[in-house]
Amino acid sequence: MPSRDAIVTLTMNPALDVTADAGEVRPTDKIRCTADRYDPGGGGVNVARFAQALGATVEAVFPAGGLTGARFIDLVTAAGIPNSPVFIHGSTRESFTVNERTTGKQYRFVLPGPRLSPSEQDRCLEKLRAAAVSARFVVASGSLPPGVPPDFYQRVGQICREADVPLILDTSGGGLARVTSGVAVLKPSVRELRECVGRPLQTEDEQLDAARELIERGVTRAVVVSLGADGALLATAQDSERFPALPVHAISGVGAGDAMVAAIAVGLCRDWSLSKAVRYGMAAGTAKLLAPGTAVFSRADVERFFEMACSRPGGDRSAATV
Image (cartoon, rainbow, N blue to C red):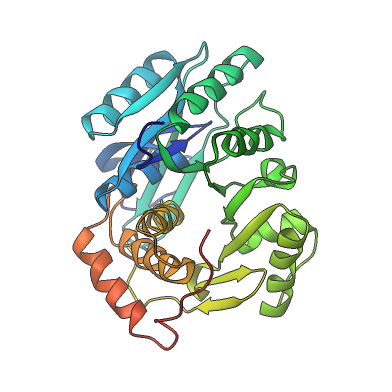
């Protein structure tokens, strides 16, 4: 058996992320943009980039097609990310983010992505199966593109079970609701958790009850609920913990959740407790708020925020591992 030391990520709907600044966003008028930048994006690809920045060994699996897909692969490779693309007939999507300088508001435009055929989906799973033999963790992150059935991530969970590799899952909609088992750590936002259980979840107790409901149903062993400016919640079958947000003046919220997932995976690869790994995730997500677009955070910022997170009450807790 090959040595298992990599974080393998799966991104079924990657995107070429275009970010630019504009003085003011107005209807009808042409909006002249400046400071444009291009990054390879999509949940799992972002996780791979951020995890590598924290010193982890990574491999990214994703479908790619058309001229956009070719540029996407070039950007991933130029970033030094080992990758296993699955070539598809459709074109990789683009996402466009505009930062309005006069107000500080951010406008994000996201396209649906190419339709994947059943054979293209199967080839993605085969690539994942091959990569999983060297994985310490598999991270499946992001939305499902058109043509992919909502139970697709359940098939990913089955592959991870067969390979004896823990799965960290960060998705939404039907892709989340149709998962029934096989997840080690589930990382929904509170909005995604509401949609999954079909309840408003207005209080922290209701949010924890919903998370434990998924654990009791056997969907996952642990749930990390991101609460945006309110921090995060961790729930396991035995315990729960609330993590307050770290104070920072945000530049861009794009990719902060992916940074959080990446750092959680890195922490677990270091055999940290899940509580400590989530604190590391909070630090990375906060550091990402200081970086433009989907640019990688400063590792020094992550370590600074991590020290801050661990100095708070409960920072030395050792909750369950996965």
